[in-house]
Length: 82
Image (cartoon, rainbow, N blue to C red; front, side):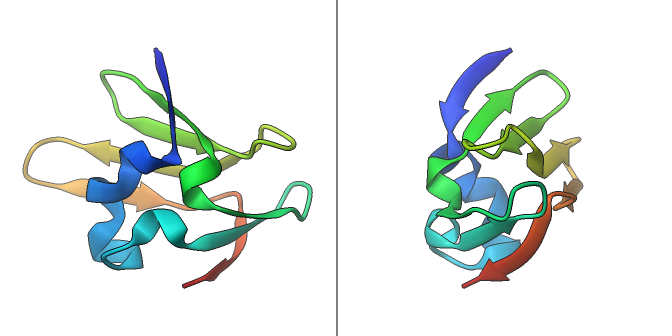
Protein backbone atom coordinates (compact mmCIF):
# COMPACT_ATOMS: atom_id res chain seq x y z
CA UNK A 1 0.00 0.00 0.00
CA UNK A 2 1.37 3.41 -0.99
CA UNK A 3 0.44 6.68 0.74
CA UNK A 4 -0.33 9.85 -1.27
CA UNK A 5 -2.36 12.98 -0.65
CA UNK A 6 -5.82 13.47 -2.12
CA UNK A 7 -4.39 14.94 -5.32
CA UNK A 8 -3.75 11.35 -6.43
CA UNK A 9 -7.51 10.98 -6.97
CA UNK A 10 -7.87 13.99 -9.28
CA UNK A 11 -8.11 12.02 -12.52
CA UNK A 12 -10.41 9.38 -11.05
CA UNK A 13 -12.89 11.91 -9.67
CA UNK A 14 -13.07 14.49 -12.47
CA UNK A 15 -16.31 12.92 -13.77
CA UNK A 16 -17.89 12.98 -10.31
CA UNK A 17 -16.65 16.22 -8.74
CA UNK A 18 -15.64 18.31 -11.75
CA UNK A 19 -12.36 19.42 -13.32
CA UNK A 20 -10.80 20.57 -10.06
CA UNK A 21 -11.90 17.67 -7.86
CA UNK A 22 -9.07 18.07 -5.36
CA UNK A 23 -10.34 21.51 -4.31
CA UNK A 24 -13.79 20.11 -3.44
CA UNK A 25 -14.44 20.66 0.25
CA UNK A 26 -15.70 17.58 2.03
CA UNK A 27 -17.28 17.41 5.48
CA UNK A 28 -16.29 14.24 7.30
CA UNK A 29 -19.23 12.21 8.62
CA UNK A 30 -17.00 10.83 11.38
CA UNK A 31 -15.70 13.99 13.06
CA UNK A 32 -17.38 16.85 11.20
CA UNK A 33 -14.17 18.48 10.02
CA UNK A 34 -14.23 20.33 6.71
CA UNK A 35 -11.26 20.11 4.36
CA UNK A 36 -10.32 19.90 0.71
CA UNK A 37 -9.99 16.47 -0.85
CA UNK A 38 -6.41 17.27 -1.86
CA UNK A 39 -5.47 17.25 1.84
CA UNK A 40 -6.88 13.77 2.56
CA UNK A 41 -4.51 10.85 3.16
CA UNK A 42 -4.92 8.58 0.15
CA UNK A 43 -3.79 4.98 -0.01
CA UNK A 44 -3.38 3.16 -3.33
CA UNK A 45 -3.44 -0.60 -3.63
CA UNK A 46 -3.82 -3.01 -6.53
CA UNK A 47 -7.59 -2.96 -5.89
CA UNK A 48 -8.08 0.82 -5.85
CA UNK A 49 -7.74 3.94 -3.73
CA UNK A 50 -9.03 5.00 -0.33
CA UNK A 51 -9.00 8.62 0.91
CA UNK A 52 -9.12 9.07 4.68
CA UNK A 53 -9.83 12.08 6.90
CA UNK A 54 -6.62 13.64 8.22
CA UNK A 55 -8.31 14.42 11.54
CA UNK A 56 -10.01 11.13 12.48
CA UNK A 57 -8.88 8.59 9.83
CA UNK A 58 -12.46 7.81 8.70
CA UNK A 59 -12.80 6.53 5.13
CA UNK A 60 -14.05 9.47 3.04
CA UNK A 61 -13.84 8.24 -0.56
CA UNK A 62 -13.13 4.90 -2.23
CA UNK A 63 -12.37 4.41 -5.93
CA UNK A 64 -12.09 1.05 -7.67
CA UNK A 65 -11.31 0.80 -11.39
CA UNK A 66 -11.21 -2.35 -13.49
CA UNK A 67 -10.07 -0.64 -16.68
CA UNK A 68 -13.43 -0.15 -18.36
CA UNK A 69 -15.50 0.75 -15.28
CA UNK A 70 -15.04 2.89 -12.19
CA UNK A 71 -16.87 2.63 -8.89
CA UNK A 72 -16.79 5.67 -6.60
CA UNK A 73 -18.21 5.66 -3.08
CA UNK A 74 -18.22 8.48 -0.57
CA UNK A 75 -19.24 6.63 2.61
CA UNK A 76 -17.62 9.07 5.01
CA UNK A 77 -18.68 12.34 3.38
CA UNK A 78 -21.55 14.19 5.02
CA UNK A 79 -21.46 17.02 2.45
CA UNK A 80 -19.42 17.99 -0.59
CA UNK A 81 -19.03 21.69 -1.38
CA UNK A 82 -17.94 22.17 -4.96
